[in-house]
Image 1 (cartoon, rainbow, N blue to C red):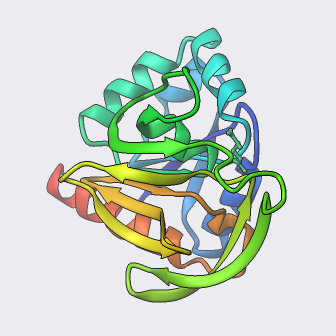
Image 2 (tube, rainbow, N blue to C red; image 1 turned 135 degrees about the vertical axis):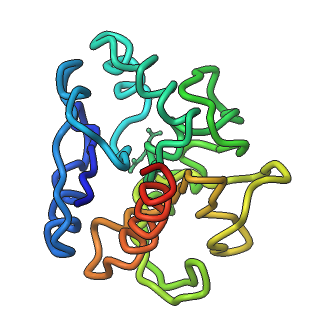
Length: 194
Ligand code: GLN
């Protein structure tokens, strides 16, 4: 049976749990170091405020352990602030976080006017609803990155190995397609490592 850890120090983590509940997938919240003792087949980094999340990860002494697991291939889904945490480079911020995905990310990339919006676009070939809230996007990316979604000429979802990033919030719509897509990666990874 698969078990997904959801970083729950700040932000929209409970909505990810609801999405996984709908798919009958077990999850647990990561709030402190001892939570990382629970066996984890995949990790979700939710939306929220990336600077606060980055600081809490360090303060709680869970940053290094999580970074190490991602580097070793733990499947991870980063949504919005979660995408910012995974980015190799932030174009308009000096902060650095996990830096495990070869993407440059611009924070709050749509400005204040277009801060939040809803649209439909393709994700990995399937049209899905997308909710953007003070969202980032990916202005550039490395050769090992596969683009999964483009909205208004901007890359808003990408994959590199077992890592997936979305600038939008898949947990805030009715569609569970992004979670299903992620769970396929988790299952494949688990079966290879058993
Ligand atoms: N703008 C936020 C940040 O930079 C991310 C927004 C979100 O996760 N909805 O951290």
